[in-house]
Length: 299
Image (cartoon, helix red, strand yellow):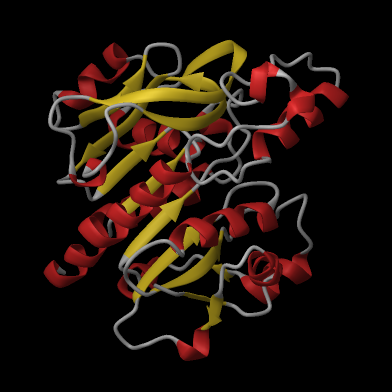
């Protein structure tokens, strides 16, 4: 089904070149699901493209609204771009959203309390929970929301987890895992993780661990009947995103490891093998169809 978004976004033309049609907001039907994206990624346009691409594979019409923080000015995106395409967060916004996504930021080595916009994002986490808006927290946002709600800190690593890792579903899974393969692959790119035991205090308060990998740690956890989903990986990543990050980090002299299970024959010159496309589409289709849509009916 179609996704509706600001037609002037660069992502719209980029996706059109891939054969993915994003329709203008003015064409959205009244019953379309309204999803907000608080985009914390430094490369806004890349993240916008990734998210519109995966949402376009869902079975229900979706309107995507881009949301920004009031207390943070992005360093890599012009004020003019933000003003043209983003709506600053307001406390009453939750009334207008059927679902909400918060993605990551490269702040792994910064203590949560030292993040400049920490008070505002904690307020957003609280507003989403109070209004029972189904929420998908991705990568750094998952760690931040878990720390805010349950007091569980991130586990900082010496080497970056980078690559496409196999995962399995623990137990019976949840609504998001309907149709998942016994083993599925997910891109990961982070310096932080949780071990399953790290989340024991949250599990005692109702959090469920849904999926993990022995090398990269917990991948998915859920709370409040799946209204809160915590995901540490990047299933939305485009095929070349890990390559971009690897070459960028190499140019910066960071001596990164070659991403695991990513390049053909582990050779950067051979290009990537995409192992996560089907999982990515199913994950977001399930979130929209099995969590967001029923959630609107109950609210």
